[in-house]
Length: 408
Ligand SMILES: Nc1ncnc2c1ncn2[C@@H]1O[C@H](COP(=O)(O)OP(=O)(O)O)[C@@H](O)[C@H]1O
Ligand SMILES: [Mg+2]
Image 1 (cartoon, rainbow, N blue to C red):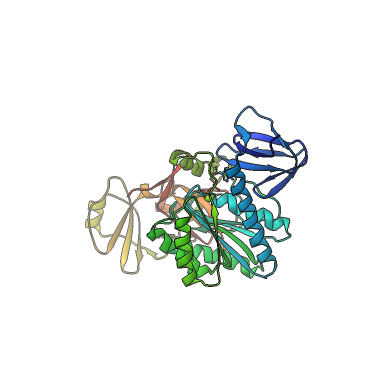
Image 2 (image 1 turned 45 degrees about the vertical axis):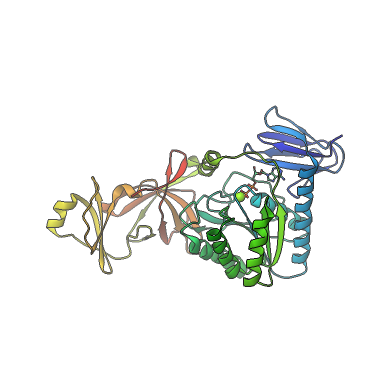
């Protein structure tokens, strides 16, 4: 009889006897487990044949030796890190690897082993592309105090808006964001962190960026996941020079997993956004300024000269900001290059993903639905209902169920 299984979603499982271990979490007889459509797991039984599938969908087969070996290696690594952390009062684990290497699953496994051993970790989702805890474009975080298994629903407790679904070109924003989230918890006396990162890894540019993270965060442990361990060894050697006290762990990626191509990952990002759970709010830029890709409400409203009005056509709003005048207009694109003016087409705001900063520095998710600039009003869809200090603008948009870069 089989003791270990490979399962692929979508399906619902039931523990039939003994216990089943999934991603380091223990499930007892009678418990049901949902395996989402784009996930696969390795299940280890305490007894022979501990689970059955309750659905006709998905896949379930006996796991092979290599798959079991990788899972055991993960559990051993997670246990070793957990026991290290149990003997100190501060622990920061940085999880690295390429896309689909198993970073999120390993982070969950570690979190499960920690809570099993009475440590309450904070899980920080630093992957702005394939967000797990929060919305795409955000660094999200959550304190884990009970067994976890991947969920689709956004559930972040504290977030930082990076404003793109790739870290490329925004490396410093990711570093600042992670530092900000870490500091938020440190001031609240949380001392154990697991940081799941984006999948930009394996070449020199991405390694320099990940080394910057090591340099700034000074993790106690760095976990690197790969099929080809070479790339992890190279990284480990470089990291050692920048943060000699960090312990490096190199672990294997699962040999077989549910295939997710680029399109699936793109759809997954969009699925995080449940429009029905968002409310429409109205903000006024004179009270709630915008900062970032487009900045408005930080200067003084002004008029533009008559001759310029003829070139621009329909001017909706103009604001003097330092040495420049920002002009928001409607209609056809303007090509005019004038050094002291910045022209913004009203269309740039439509469906823009934004971060809504509350007084504690927590950034909430929002989508700009429309602007009515002659009256300085901004309409935003958001799950958030509290006070907003300012709006962080970006270059990403919500378009037909997915997130796209806006072209301007
Ligand atoms: N041990 C494993 N056996 C089979 N599939 C796995 C295993 N670990 C992870 N997976 C699956 O592999 C895919 C990628 O894993 P994930 O942790 O999301 O990687 P990453 O965060 O590095 O992109 C997911 O579908 C996940 O369910
Ligand atoms: Mg991931």
